[in-house]
Image 1 (cartoon, helix red, strand yellow):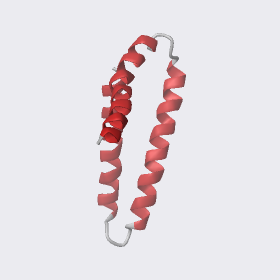
Image 2: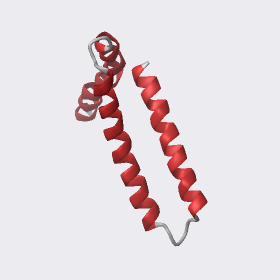
Image 3: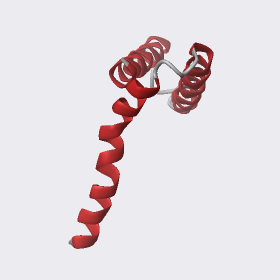
Image 4: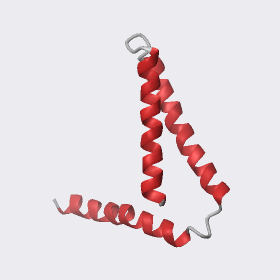
Length: 85
């Protein structure tokens, strides 16, 4: 439908432009600003993961929950490097 096409057309360029905008402002962006942004992101994701792991506590072992957190951190790190390098 035309409505759906318009929506994806609005959303796609944002994703494509994000790394370009980052590159152009890289020199202006302070390291501590980036670190605070990154810590906010990781904090939010970890809070979500911990809440989820507590909810599934009876079904999953400690090792499994720990593995989920490690995988989550790896995926965040990968995303940061792909977006900001």
